[in-house]
Length: 316
Image 1 (cartoon, rainbow, N blue to C red):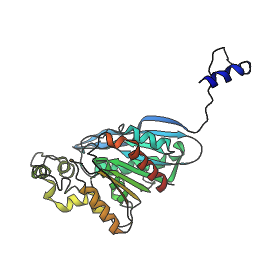
Image 2 (tube, rainbow, N blue to C red; image 1 turned 135 degrees about the vertical axis):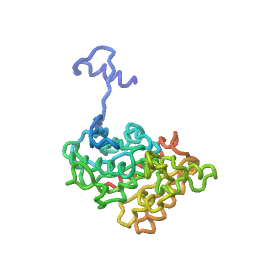
Image 3 (tube, rainbow, N blue to C red; image 1 turned 60 degrees about the vertical axis):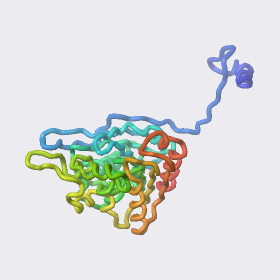
Image 4 (cartoon, one colour; image 1 turned 180 degrees about the vertical axis):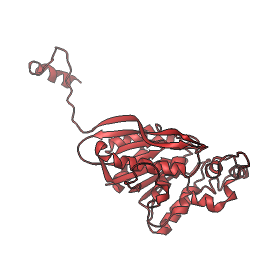
């Protein structure tokens, strides 16, 4: 700091605002300013059993303030299909924005709302960004999806249902909801075997009609419906799963999972990796040794750098 002080003293009379004892710092402009915009309503949906009631779905944006069109990434948060706190995973989102991406984080419908509502929401978020691409400096041809846990499920579904028009509901239907890259972090690929390889007690929980994947697909017990387990209709459950939509036309995928995950079986990512590889486009697959389901390991620099660099490569 002494050299800085001496330089400030030497050049004092040349510098506006100089006073004896001031320190001089010069800053090189190597990072863009990032604007944060919250409270954006990207879609409005009717509430369950209340056709006249409207729910507004929100997203927030991080937008690098620089010239030129930028790739964009939509982040879908995890929450076990019962919550969608779109303001979480802040370190990852900020790192992506510093890396030059417009980063949207979007909430979506959760239980007691049922499938396919959340997939429709994910596709709506993509269309919203394309419809407002000029306002946010987004390159229409470079949009990716990212999610963890249940959000990883949604990122997978968005990535694998390109061209399936049944999921395109709501506004901006003149825009495509396809993405050019998708990353899933300890995500769910098959609702029928989320706990595969776990204990007998865990298996029994996943066969309950009150477990969240069953509620997502079949809905809660109500009136004359006693509820149903996820295994009660395997065809319906598979159709609601990413594994039911693999056709070989998928975009590049990044799959990450912790080897010590006790909530969503690592087999979820293994089977997705093998199925996508067999379908013709091999994804990138990263196992994080000793990492569980969420927690501190997933917010560390090596993990964040892996995701940022992968998107830089695949949305270049």
